[in-house]
Length: 220
Image (cartoon, rainbow, N blue to C red; front, side):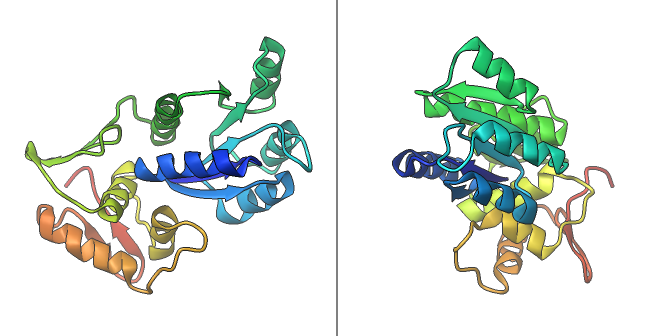
């Protein structure tokens, strides 16, 4: 799940980014509103965390502009403006959630998981396909109720595939969910992770669509 963090306090942004990456999110960070609008158009993040007090333009203007450009994915406002008027203004401008500073990182993560579930049409933290169960809160994976040990990237890749069952995802799509801006990515990174996962998962769980990408199916 790719998150765009729009926050001009670099120290706060660093702390949020580290916490979100530890929880299995890919985080890209910008500190200006104009950069946020460019990133939304070019990288199509799954979720945007948006501060309102940006140095070049108000965060609500960023939000309205993004919605006018038909960006439909969830936006969570993160700001020190915590009056009822501010919250109503944010929600009326197209925000999906509103979290006032200061906040606990656990609450931010819970709200992001709720937005994830909304994106995937799920009401639970559990992704279940056949014998495989993935808990997006604890990051635990089980196969036939037996724990499965995977690397962080393998977890993120499997989660990306299980969030969209029956949907073929290209290597570029999966790369964007595994790596942030500026991270060095080898040309066959996805293939390596797929190979390692297949050795741990039931035969045929991850299927290759030749010349297109990879898919998991929630029905035979």
